[in-house]
Amino acid sequence: MRYVSTRGEAPVLSFEDAMLTGLARDGGLYVPETVPTMTSDEIAALAGVSYEEAAFRVMRPFVEGSFSDEEFREIIAKAYAGFGHEARAPLVQLESGHFLLELFHGPTLAFKDFAMQLIGQLFQVALAKRGEKITIVGATSGDTGSAAIEAFRGLDNVDVCILYPHGRVSDVQRRQMTTPSESNVHALAVDGDFDDCQARLKDMFNDFEFRDEVKLAGVNSINWGRVLAQVVYYFTSAVALGAPHRKVSFTVPTGNFGDIFAGYIAKKRGLPIDQLVIATNQNDILHRTMETGAYTKGEVTPSISPSMDIQVSSNFERALFDAYGRDGKAVQSQMADLASGGFTISQGAMEFLKEQFTSGRASEDETSAEIKRSFEATNEVLCPHSAVGVKVAREHLTDTPMITLATAHPAKFPAAVKDACGQDAPLPPRMADLFDREERVTRVAGDLDALKAVIREKIGR
Image (cartoon, rainbow, N blue to C red; front, top):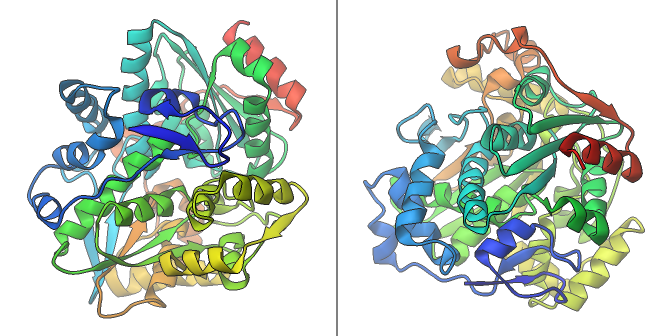
């Protein structure tokens, strides 16, 4: 399997090289040259198998040439061994035809664990074979950072530096990043919002001298390996509800577009998906784009669903690449316009996007009201992000079963949950002492030179 850049000017890479590279040298994102489809019989055969076996079958073609079957099976087994539910991603029925996909049973209680635990194992095997050491730098709006630290903490051949917006993540999210004691992980509280963190991360990747000096690698959702891992639970949940013999719809609370793009890949892979519904909070650039065709940045407004407080959705570039017929120059032009504030998507590209996706939004009041409504109606306690998804999903219900992705455990956002429905959301026993642990964090200005200096210091360069 070969991987190409969405901007068309970077080298074509293998899965292993694309995963370790992260952002392409032309500033684009790597995508597979082709997406192989699964037959109806192959999809039906996923019924009743373990999550790990389904993961192997769904992902195997994409890693061809980089890992043997034996290596890949062992990597998958290690990745999901620490999850707190045997099904890994269990389904819960909310109402007639509407189901919740619980993606918060991993080590850090968020859907990011599905990808990050796998990426950690893939990196470890690949780097051991190469005898290399790398520096992972990631930007997070809350959950990616803790999932990355959990996946890479203590590894000899990896240093991890995570940038998060100071004062704009929940206390639980922050402490999951700042309390690990391993010397190879570093939490950097950046002055600014998530988009600032993400922009500085891209600046580092585009500074080739620095990139090569520290052997920079990325595990943000720009990394194709992250998207690939998330494709799996679309298949397992859909098959549980009768696919491929009937269609299934999905609603995905998303800010950076990676999780719903994984659903799009599942659809290209052959999964019979009816609707892919983008659910946004008040920072609704994706919903506005789907409504108007104009992708225009606004100000980020802090919310009770902070992991979605984003105005530049990196993975949307991958969807644009397909929408423009895989024309890298067209994508490059649009991304250049984004630097000036935004761009307008062509009519043909918008028609493509509207064939694949629909969208909705939830205000702060609507999010809190959904947490309260869901608890009173079903006794299900939702985190604010999942509540955004459930609210939007209920507006798109049809005769086709709808699966809403529950992206985080409510314990990660206890204040918002208690304010909304009066319920405490306790941490699982294995994390009960989180607020007793000592924090290690470095506050940094949102300045590229300052960040590069801190990273050099942390990794001993």
